[in-house]
Length: 68
Image (tube, rainbow, N blue to C red; front, side, top):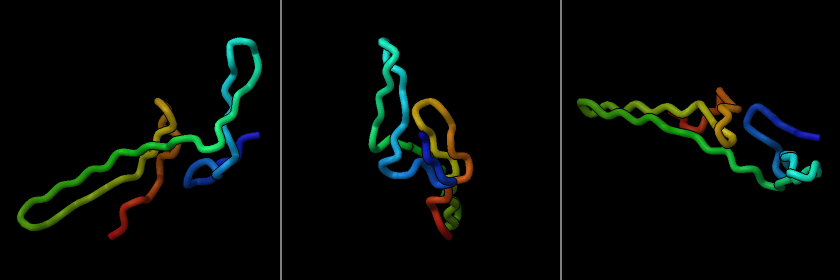
């Protein structure tokens, strides 16, 4: 069973991956990474960060990490 919320996988929920012998392996803390954009011009700073990736999959497309 996979448990996900809008902010990402539930801690300890695990993510199933099929091994070569057909068994499933679970990770208790999957790693979700993101990118940030930062721009500074004439003393004004702009920052954005809304995408979180799970491996090469752009899984969470509306994650808010940077607040005004």
